[in-house]
Image (tube, rainbow, N blue to C red; front, side, top):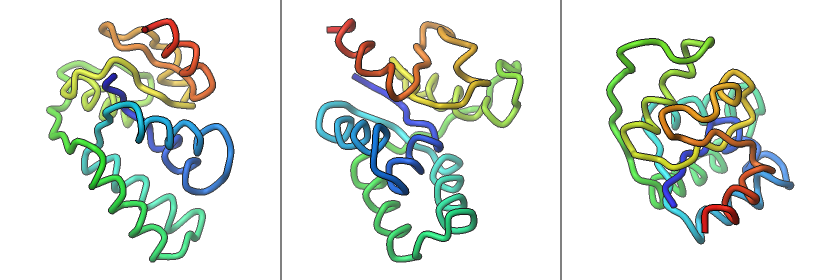
Length: 134
């Protein structure tokens, strides 16, 4: 299944143990996922500047993403879709990648579910969505 993991999920996957870390490992083993330069940059900034993750750990995580994700160049949305304009970038990534699901904890995105056939689910809700999609 093609999915996109929002920056908040990726950051939580590396910064803490728990649902997001388990989900990230599951996606690596069982699904395809995409990133773009904006998403990678946001993850790097948050890990480095807000969470003060050591640079070598940030670099290792970025390499992991580059090695396992599909890099996508998405065109901006013609019309705003989200109440937070910054979130339109991740929707554009999902559209360009033809993702089935966007996994996020962002309420501004979650209220859009479904968007253009894209399911927008929380990390904990992804498991039920995955089972129902089989």
